[in-house]
Image (cartoon, rainbow, N blue to C red; front, side, top):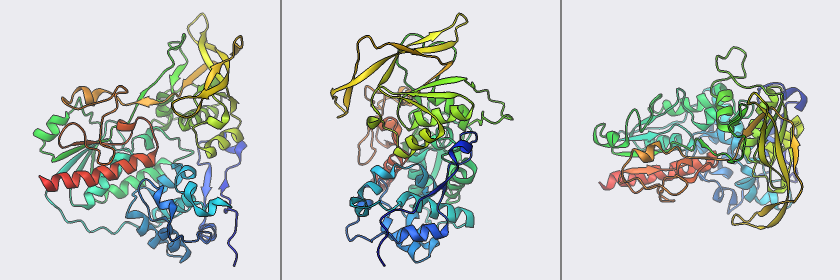
Length: 462
């Protein structure tokens, strides 16, 4: 039988309906659809998909199990390398990683690896299937700071090696960016995030919430008083960046970080929530990444007419193509090659609009992207009553300021070995956004896995 060229389409909520609710947009594959899509995998002898996966999941292996109708077996293959398949299947940028290196994608549609991973992850959650892991205690313990993707990945791998693991989380719920950063309509919290974290807790990992390292406890206290053998810093990058333009202190200007935390962590969109959130009439979101798309689509669901303002062209948008597509379907207004130069306020100190200039693309900059250049005399205004800045984030400096000898760079990121996560402090390792600045879930997980291996080697060598 000939292999189908096109991927099995995925079912989604109608755009007009989903723009008014916070329910998940994508329904994912059902059993029959997953079997059909799995048949498209040609089981390469040299699978490029694995090479591009930051956590090295045996992708052909789990897809073959789906073809054999052994979904529990497919889960067992994934669980060897990833503890968050339902999360990763939803939010990983597969188009630039595993699917981007799929041989089928050279002349046809690549295999929908992400949708298949999500199917397997959701199936085991729905059927209560747990990873079968025999743990032999080794008598050592490791502290993990932060319960986001890097911390959870590191904790899981070390726990399987017999370490007693305690994760210290600053917020009142575990999950890090999975909980506070990614909207419900992309990543359901009860159905997915908390259940997959629950699987890690079932291994014997302990999570202590409301513990701020650098305030409640210091890293030196963890090592010297609490007697942890090593520490892994996975505290993320939660300090927002702004443009430093006039008007940023007006009422109605928010960072995407604060706006999304209110909506996602505190469920401020729910009328029964005690957390307030500003419901704009017209909102401008400044930026072009996935976080900007999340903020724009969240504001839309809260009733606003939304403008997404980005200084480069659509071709340079760093957001996933899927997120851009969904945003357009839902009615987000894209204002490309546009840059704000001032936020305008009324006599009461509230936002009334933004003054922008039009841009054109010049020569490539250090990132390889063409630099935006201001078009002279192109100023214009957009009427809005809220502005959300989504320009990236950097690590909170609290840990570095309270940890003598911990080296950071000019961006306040912790300096760590790319392959091991080792920092300038013996026994202290770091990974994820705390090292790289804001990046993807799967890259953070990959850093967590590398650090776990290095921590194990470090403790064994002591």
